[in-house]
Image 1 (cartoon, rainbow over the protein chains, first blue to last red):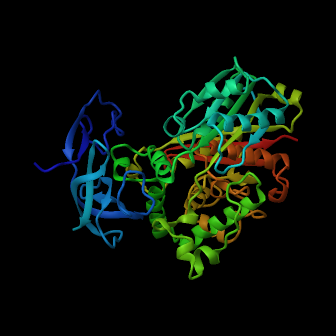
Image 2: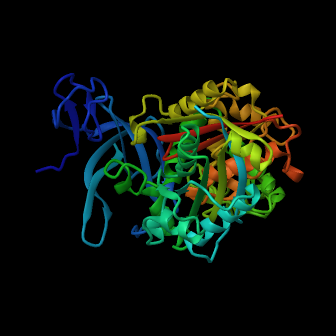
Image 3: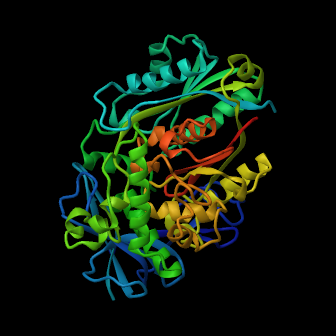
Length: 115
Length: 391
């Protein structure tokens, strides 16, 4: 089964959220966990990006591409970029992969490549 | 609400300090206590971000209050990311304004050079969203870099403007003996010469080494008192007249307009409204230039210049000493250094120094109204303060 990253849709007003929050930012009325999960789209356009040279501890690569992507449903998310020469506005496609390794854990997140 | 005055200030050199965290805090506090001429306080607030994670120490305020032999005064630590300092001043202000306390010591401290640079970067990155940001390897320079790229595209800010902020603030630090960086830099050396890319490599494109503040240890302290106590102590009457604090989404990508810093805008507007001042009344300002872009953007969001025109004011020299609104004349975070928990208090220290007329070579002539902006997270928790000198 393909891994997904989920957005959270308020059951009262349909407002979508990513990441998860306890209270809907629009209606502010939902009770505990009154959200439906909806997989985030994987296609989108690159809004902004950077290449980081001073990485936090635990990364065993020299540099890391990061960007904020506007997904095709209008939501935004931050992800890692596997793109040599990123340009703002370019079409990208995401897949869910390991983005951080710690001693006992692998963390999955979205990695974007040129579409 | 009672009026609140700053009766004493103290600071340590911002650099790598080989002292225990509580000793750094105590050193700055002792200077502030001596400056105010007091040996007893009602309450201590210690602003700090990393004691638990970096220095393996919790309940720091209990250690500091005892080290200073101020027991049995009340004491509490305030951890609010890089806005810890401003938040602790707000807590101290509320304590005095409410009438509950007459004398409050607020001290900010950080010792982040105890760990290596990679760990320090990781420690600061823990303020980002754990699931949507932190796991990707996002650092604060990375957030600032992505923000900068949007700002460049939208408003025409260039790498030269960023370098100009860096040169202005780092060279301003030469007039501040407490500042971390004591090395003169030039646009030629960090931008124009063939060696510039070696001198000034990218840390997170388009931000370079000299666009970022250094990682520093240090402490800063202020004593807040009631009007009655301030008159009794006889120090210059510097009053905190406006306090504003505002928050924004934790995950940066959730903000509707990604080039806005709405928490800065609201915190500043609230502080000015409370003081009955306008941004144009300010004689000297401390903005939170952890990255050069932030000084430009904050100068717009707090209302000194229209949105998108901060870099033009910078070009005209309006933000330099002698300009219309001198910003970060003591070096800012860029030159003075950025021990995260101490920064908000260090900003207040600089403004009180200026309003007392003790700025020496960096003194803004006739400064009467001062302003600070302490920026936490990537703009998700901001404290702004106004200070006024009473005749």
